[in-house]
Amino acid sequence: MSDTLAPERETRPAPPPQEPRRRRINLGNVLVEGRALVALAIIVVIFASLSPNYLQPDNLILMTRHVAMNAILAIGMLMVILNGGIDLSVGSTVGLSGVIAGYLLQGWDMPITQLVAYPPVWVVIIGAVALGALVGYVNGLLVSKLNVAPFIATLGMLYVARGIALLITNGETFTALQGEEGLGNTGFVTFLASAPLGIPMPVWFMVVFAVGFSLLLNRTAFGRWLYATGGNERAAELSGVPVKKVQTLVYVMSGFCAATVGLLLTADLPAATPRAGEFYELNAIAAVVIGGAALSGGRGTIRGTLIGAFVIGFLVDGLVLVGVSVFWQQVIKGAVIILAVAVDQLQQSFQKRRALRKVAASTNRPGSPSPA
Image (cartoon, rainbow, N blue to C red; front, side, top):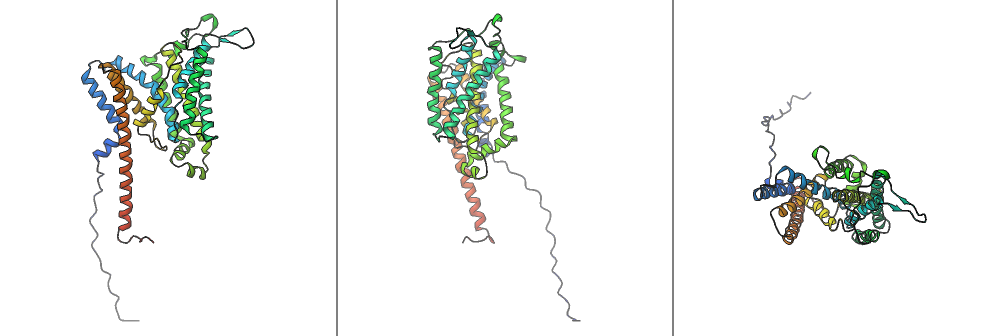
């Protein structure tokens, strides 16, 4: 046994307990991330100061009713944009679905026979919505199966749907939408233009659509597939995602939302005109973009889209209320859209630079493996 004693281990005092780091809030990041909500707040403050009627309950209900139409359309558009596509045919689908509803309510001249059918209201609603979904299905097949560019496919369908609506009506407007008790086709306008609990029916539809599609995106496999497909289609396909099926379904959803808006708009007028819904696709795209969605796909939320729809609606109605010229309204709305896209691009560029700096810092840290 050796008499040599082992050297005692050097004992170091334990470091004092560190206080948990407080997360710093970057005001600039908060403003950029919540830019749509900030823009909405600024709009409300400006127009409330310019017009005492802007925040009156009746005017708020009216503005929200207008917002609801665009919001429902924008929710369907969001589904397509998340997939990396675009749907320019939704405005024409709005007009076509309304025309089909008006045509059926006034009586359907059955071919071959000399009979005229007056379907009940629920058949009219289901038929019009099914037609909108069919238009979306054709768009989806063109994009997913034939690899037609979404812009071209939906641009062509824009003209086809609008042309069919004009052919059915011969350019005229259907106004007899009330129906007759003896024919059993009453209740279309009464139901879709009603206001349960003082809230217009379009607003109720907006809430239902927002909740339903939010659950679809966040709680189902389809939502994960959609974000994955929009983010990187090739990687999603290699991961087993049914890419073609997702591409088709998002256009069906967009057509379904557009047909619903067509029914609500027809009941609200109340008249079925083939020109209804013109340029609605632009307002829907604007709401999605202002809400923070990326046109390249893979990024966007229902919440952001709703806020974007409120920004567009409250801005336009405010400009009308204070008497701004229609021409200046177009200029201001276009400037807001450009600003929203520019801020989004700046945000993406900043995030990429910050990610590259983090990678460079971790690579240059002492002890980190040197690049081969």
